[in-house]
Image (cartoon, rainbow, N blue to C red; front, side, top):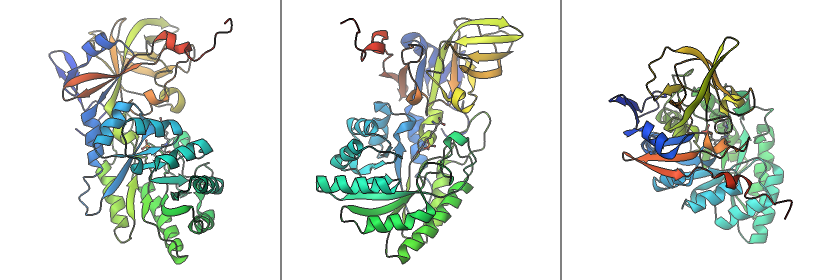
Length: 422
Ligand code: LLP
């Protein structure tokens, strides 16, 4: 099992669609739709693939929790030995709850609050990826209050174009992320001279859904130049963290380097240096491990358009509305009709609630459709807009399916609200 195609793990046996050995239609019947379904085997295979680079040096992986933060998935990866890349106090609490090793946690993010910094210091995390002078000053001040020394890396902005969607491009000069290469030396000198800070590394996440290795290598080259300047200034790093960003196969993009290609290319470039390689993959571990099952509520023909209306909406999966991605669909109900150019839409009261336009599909009310490639930034970015309860999630492992998040109950939609009349 690899990243070879968005439907790679699907198989058709006896007229039924299977995902990783488990028939999908019965899952939709049992747990209802919309339903996210993940494969543990795929996630673990992708995780291990990062280590299968054939080089002597090793790579330390910190899974980017934001991609899919379900506790069971964090537990699965923690058990496999993964560390975690977090961006909030909420993610810190999740990782600790899942039994993740605090020493293998790195804390990224442009605007960490004092409370979040303090919680991470108390948990004894492995490294803060600091993104500004004000953050370094806050980490130092809080560390002094807590009587500890904070391990830090500085996230630099390597100024390379990752050639991806502008919303998920982070390593360009004009982006809000990291510290510019020109300012980095002064910040490292500040950190190296501060008794409450211990300089460990440099981080440089440049974007997401990156489909070639070159931007990573260009970023690494720029970062190694800076590391050499730091050496001259007497500041020695132990690791270089290239962030996440490796893309996954999509219907539009079928040629993607494998995780082992990325590890190998970066390790080769680092082999003449003393620096250990750290990575923070998110999407490449979970993206193609997840499918979203939804039921067709009805079809309607109007003004020359054929609409297939699903019970999953932009509240369940917002990426098509936000980044104009077009997911791949498959009708699991073996509809025998003729494919039509269809508008694949959800039930939310917005025209933006459109998953795909002019999509070749035959479907009728009651059919169950699978949407591929939604394991990353799917459930994690979902909401309850239009008071639509959040979907359920199922994890397939060793040929069995297990509920890992029950469907939200409608009463939970207003559970935090305070009754005006009381
Ligand atoms: N490390 C840092 C510091 C990050 O900001 C991110 C993602 C990652 C690692 C993981 O990147 P990945 O391996 O997943 O590409 N919601 C967007 C993606 C936003 C990515 C944000 N940062 C989407 O749905 O495409």
